Image (cartoon, rainbow, N blue to C red; front, side, top):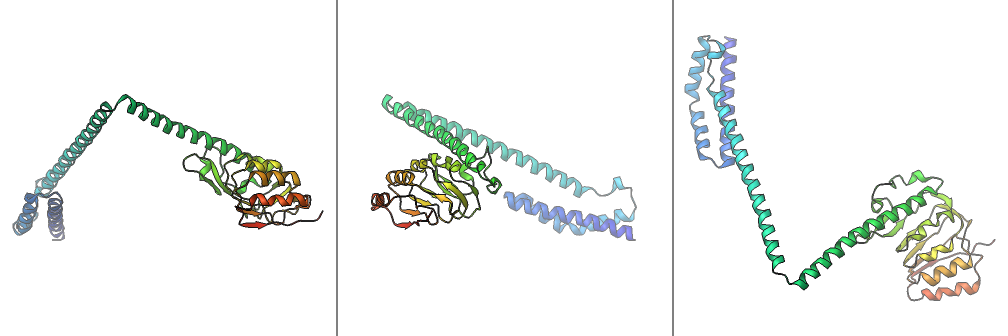
Length: 300
């Protein structure tokens, strides 16, 4: 009796599952016939139940048992696959038609252009390609400079995202111009970087820098006069480094005379005792732009 119940339960589960699947698929695809067929099959479960009971009671062989539900599922599976193939083929044709239409429209548009307009279009395309090539070149040069800067530290592992072969504009502390690819902002404050100031002057070749923040690290030694190459600087912060970090008159003069757009100049803690009083008067060069100034003169 238990085997009979098991067989009966399996058959009923199969047909209920099939009816539910057929009904949902019919709703999804908009096929009314499938929905009606599912309803018909559901209401026909009474007769199906009786047939299953009789077949199970007669103990027929497994290959002679009721297989209608299995066959219907196979038909539904085949129909689903055919429907998918048809829709996929239709979608591919639509894509090809759109591509052909775009080519046709582009061809007509180009054919309607005058020689002067074609030359202008060619010039604009060439400028666009030139900007792309220029950006890649600028990124490559900036990456090389930044890696040299990193390798001059006593603790280069701190800048773990600075890896050769990657896009330097995505490195920690680095911000680039989206069009040119030039490094515009370098913020490396509070990283406990340790190294001598003069060998680290490689970053002063990043002539498009507008903001440079190396504050609260452990740089020491003389600040190179090549810092004056950063003529586009708007913010410079070298404060709170080692008291052995020095700025002499020559480097100071070159910096102030060239970086005339400085709005923030923070040199707190930098030894400026070697700068003559007459050189300090050069701050008047920055009178129209300077907003924040922090300096200190540390005695020898």
